[in-house]
Length: 224
Image (tube, rainbow, N blue to C red; front, top):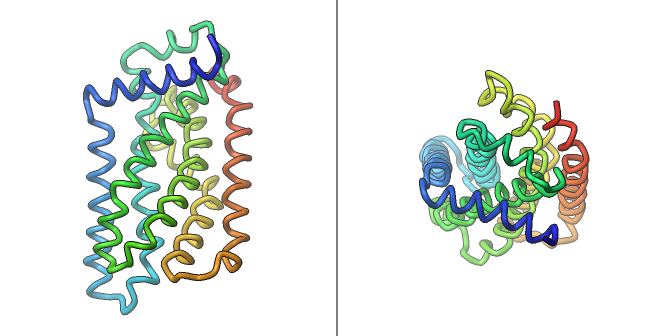
């Protein structure tokens, strides 16, 4: 079987499991929505300019809701006893990593795209900014999912797996989140692309670096 078909088979497996229960996507959506609502009401009372704070609120919602999905990525396999079977399957470990990474990226991107209209409405932004924010959200999701999938596989074998994942992950994804926030701010303020080009380049570079390094280290992590 072609490696791409194996990767898509893993993505399809995770998608089918989630569609049966809907527990992960539901929790991610509710959490992201609550973050946006709470911050919106708080800033409406205390902040003079919501547009200045809006990019940070958006990425707090995406990052923390994404953390819920990433933490469940391998925990579900572990709790159901299927993780060992997945690792013993006659496929390269890199294929497993890419399948899980794409699945995680898909779930996080879906939540990000769903909450974007709510975010735009609550913060009184123009609907014209949504395509740019959607593109930034997808790019940020790739970086978050790459290294997040690796650390999720690492943390699943520990007792404090839900706590350990954000502790390990947040320091590493700072460049991705910072770049995404700066790009979102530029999109909301309708700045020329040239003024934010360095942040776009940084985000793309870190997406590639995180994905490649996580791919290379995944085999070692699951063996240990």
